[in-house]
Image (cartoon, rainbow, N blue to C red):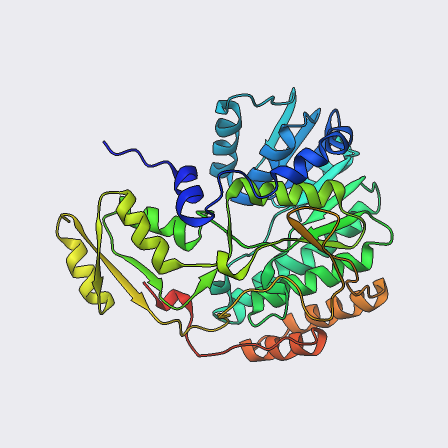
Length: 402
C-alpha cells in the first residue's frame, strides 16, 4: 500500500520550504507569545475548519489554560478533538470544550456570558469560496455570515472585550473582483470601525494547500473515488501549508496592533499552477497524467479501472469572479516590512466610524428584505459601499465545472 504524506508533499512540491515560513518570526517572538497565551482562556469560532484548527494547534504549543471551540460542523469538531489528542507533544488544556452550534445563536451568547471572560477570541467562521456567488441566494448567505454576523459578534464583545481579537480575511479583499472578496473587504471595514475600542487584527493570506473544500482537497477526493482530476490550466496562486496558515493567524492575533492587517511576504516566482500540482500529485500516487480534451472524455476514461495513466481535464478559466493574479495589498496602503521576517503589515487601513458602518449594514439588510432581489442588485449595492470593487461577471460559475 502506497502511503501518501500530505505535509511532505506540500513541502516538496507546493511551498518548497523545509521549514515553516513563519518559524523565524515565532522564534524571535517566542517569549512574547508565551507571555500572552500561556495560562490564558481562548474562544475559537469556526475552529473545525482547516485554518481554525491550525490556529488551535499553533496556540496549544504555548499552553492556554482554557479552550472553547465553536463550529456548526459537528463531525469536524469530532475530528479536531481526535487530531489534537493524537498529536505528539501537544498539551491539551484541562478545560477543552467543543460545541456544534451557530455563533449567532442564543446558546452561543450564553456560553460567552457564562464561560468568559476570554483573553483571546478568534473568528474563522466564513464563506470562503468564490463559487458561493452563483446567485442572489448564495450571495445573501455569504454576506450574512461574513459581514452581518461578524458585526453582531463585535457588538457582543463590547460587553466583555478580549485582550486579543482576530477575524480572518483573505487576499481577495485587496482590489476585489468577486463577491467573496468584496464581503471580506466589507468585513475588514467593519472590524476597523471597532479597532479603537477592541484590540482587533486580521490577516490576508494565500491559498491553504489541501484545506477543506479546496481544489487540492478535491483532488484527493477524486482519487479516492476513482474520478478524473480537473483544474484550470491558466491560474497560478500563492500557497501556504495548513500549519503556516494557523501560525500567521496566531502571530496576527497575539502580536498585531489594533487595525493591523497581516500578510505573508511571498514573491511572484513562488506562485504555482493548479495543473502542475495535479501532475505532481498523480506522480506521488504512482500515476501519469492522461490529458483529456473534454470533461466527458475524462469521465469515460475514469470509469474504467485505471492503469498507470490517470485522466485529467485542464481548461482555461472562464467563471465569474476569477482573478488572474493574487495580491495582498493595494497601492494606497502603507506597509510595514521591517517588524517581521516573513510578514508584512498594512498599517493605514481606513477606519470608518461606527455610525457609518451601521448605516452600511442597515442598507444591506434593507436590500435583503426585497422579495424579488437579483444578483446584480446586490453587486450594485456593494460597488457603492466598496470603492474599487470591480466585479468580473462571465455568466458562468464553478458549480458548472467538473
